[in-house]
Length: 428
Image 1 (spheres, helix red, strand yellow):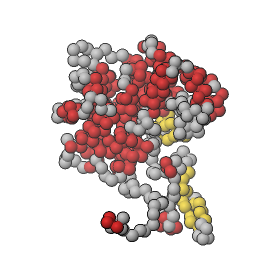
Image 2 (cartoon, helix red, strand yellow; image 1 turned 60 degrees about the vertical axis):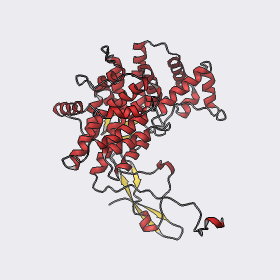
Image 3 (tube, one colour; image 1 turned 30 degrees about the horizontal axis):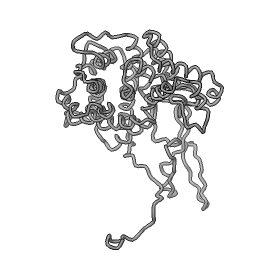
Image 4 (tube, rainbow, N blue to C red; image 1 turned 180 degrees about the horizontal axis):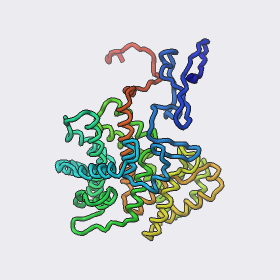
């Protein structure tokens, strides 16, 4: 028998709401018929208590610090998998066989090139254009190059997903090259996914780019831990835009735009900006730790704590190890990295931060790693988008394949003026 909850209204009416139970024991009230039966809707600013869908892609337990893709712990994927294999898992639902993985890699490799006409788009952007603006614009424009293709909608959608996986690194690298005035580097199909991206970012036509395996490994891990994170702002945006049956390119471009904000994908950029602020003020970390404890100071430590995780962010544990290894290998002399390590140590050992559970999160460590790799600060969010792409694709695919899907159309509670009479302009 299906469990139900009762809601009693002030007029004595009782509404029964079914209780939906997820595979990990999550419980939710199904309010899909609430308005029809009672005339009421719910209000939940920021949707913190609202489930917009059922999904089989990612599970998070914020209290216990658990993150799993398709049931597999993020710790195992970060240690044993690759970004391409993890992408296959998210998009297709299962780990691939060796043959399936080989074919998936070949499909991506075959589509890394952009139409030559796309290069002219970059000429129209100012040199200081934000790379996220370029990324979203070029991704959306790809829909104009792939129109009226032969095949059923599922085949077309999957092929466009492969194209996005293949071309997003090229689009991102060219945005960087545009900003520094260097010639574009074409993809090299003899390299793996992360190697290819790094050579397009930092390679030059006049000399061979030496690929550092430590950088490749760190980047691959970063992309894995960013690959999906349940119904966050950008993923929810992707599902909402896809619900209108927009094409895959426009759908993913909407996710890129949502990710751009400082409250979402821009958080790792905010970490570096905070470190720069501390450095410019003499590098006094103790002063800023004290300010962070003082509610009247207006200062907030960026990269500490998380809206979902009430324990240590499991992704932060993984990437901290990569961060320490990378900084040790590169042996960089950078005052910002020194401040970051001092700030991390202070926060981890301070009772105030322990009690508030304000641990360094994934944005703190990823910002440090990207800086150490030579990624420009304004391109940090682009790196986030590269990682999140397979998750967006997986959610767009899951939505499309759901036979009960409907166009997203939230309700509201109107608080404006009641009916008024129109007054002609000459009488106002």
